[in-house]
Figure 1 (cartoon, rainbow, N blue to C red):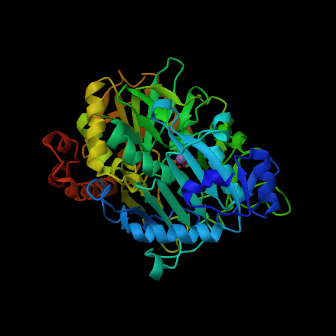
Figure 2 (figure 1 turned 180 degrees about the horizontal axis):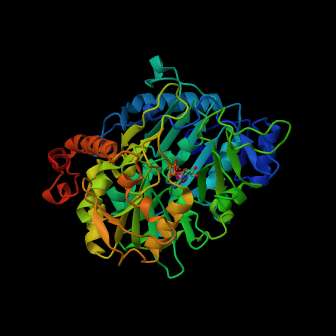
Figure 3 (figure 1 turned 30 degrees about the vertical axis):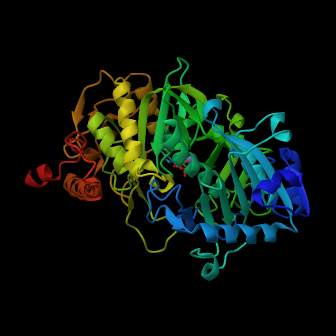
Amino acid sequence: MLARLQPLGISQAREICLNLPPAALVAEALQNGEGTLTDTGALMADTGQFTGRSPKDRFVVRDENTAASVWWGDINIPFDPTKFEQLHQKMVAYLADKKLYVREAYAGANADYQLKLRVVNELAWHNLFCYNMFLRPGAEADTAWTPDFSIICAPGFEADPAVDGTRQKNFAIIDFTRKLILIGGTGYAGEMKKGIFGVLNYLLPHERATLPMHCSANVGPAGDTAIFFGLSGTGKTTLSADPQRGLIGDDEHGWTPEGTIFNFEGGCYAKVIDLSREKEPEIWDAIRFGAIVENTRFAPGTHTVDYANKSVTENTRTAYPISFIPNAVEPGVAGAPQHIFFLTADAFGVLPPISKLDKSHAMYHFMSGYTAKVAGTEMGITEPQTTFSACFGQVFLPLHPTRYAEMLGRKMDENPNINVWLVNTGWTGGSYGTGSRMKLGYTRAMITAALAGQLTDVPTHAHPIFGVQVPAAVPGVPAELLNPRGTWASPAAYDQTAADLAQKFVKNFEKYADFASADILAGEPRVATVLAS
Ligand code: ATP
Ligand code: MN
């Protein structure tokens, strides 16, 4: 067994558990005191000090392979190859007396584009997370397995920043030459899945002419594919779980030169804050034996998860194999999308709940990647926080965002019948504090109508500032909700807030001046028009 770990520099361990099935990993996790069972049989674990990814501690090794290709900066923070090797050796020494959980799995549901992975975990529940989230091989994993990329994840190992070149004791570092990700000092399991996403975001465009996308995807009975781009919390996972449509995946997909899409993952990682069976039955029912729930708490005196409890974090999560969703499509592959949804949780309450984009607007909004989060747990902050994240996921992009945007533009030119929609899953009737979040049922109805072609012949009007086409009627949705200005108590306040938001878009886009052709700028909000009127 050790021979399998030799390429990773690991020549000593107390014990090695290779590709344990879920029940064995759950038993290990319980025995190790890593977690406890909920009354639905899910394994409940805490991630520790880090309850989310730590973008400031995410590095890429800078060497002759990557120096010229990677988009260096505060997203892809350069890391010295010698320091990486040093840290690697220290981690190996740290693991020498530990029981190790090793998992061999795939990333990429399309066999022509997949990566073979090997993950070495200090924690049994992390290994279960990898079983759930990556693609599960058959018996081939237990025989010959030559990984294309590996992860060593040791939450109990802490770096010494002064010696190791990290920022603090926790780190996630990708080395494209050694084909290895090192994760230490953090127990947030999402670092592993987003680490591999980063790897694919580099390799696929670079080597395979494939567009990687931070989006969910599902497919209708007629084989019509829809994809949903959006930053965290905008609804990718929630809205892709649709009983009328097959689920391809909830977070990461690739679009191949052959014009098909495929899921990178084998599972879903859903937020469970305030989860209810009534609103999200598919996700609720997936939380059973084999699933993991992270950072949740029980109702007092029970083993029933209280999803309203935010005492650990707002970012409570569940991870389960995609087959736990009744309509999952396996393998997760489908044809080119006919509908692209850009999801935004606009906490200013400015953007229409649904609007149609032409190519210029689509490119502009893809590069802008706008959402506005509410401050959440931070005390005293009541203003929504604006986020612009290129391609709706710039923190995961090792290459410059324009590389991905150009690829999407070409895909749209090749597929002129694609419908692109902007969906505001955020606020209506005013900004955060005054208005309220758009009802999930209405958002679902708008998406269903768009997918059914029911918005094609509906009269629309152009939003006066953003220029996007707003439908006058959507089946199952009160018409007055569709035009956000009319939902505000004060239309003048709406105009002011909309002008402010438009200004932020324009300001953000200044950094793409080199890329901004007249075509793309035609999708920019009209700040001047508003000020003049
Ligand atoms: P991540 O990238 O972090 O996985 P995500 O885009 O998958 O994020 P979801 O997990 O789908 O985001 O989170 C959306 C959250 O917002 C859910 O908790 C959902 O219940 C809630 N929500 C409330 N109203 C709406 C709405 N109108 N549309 C979509 N989601 C809504
Ligand atoms: Mn999600």
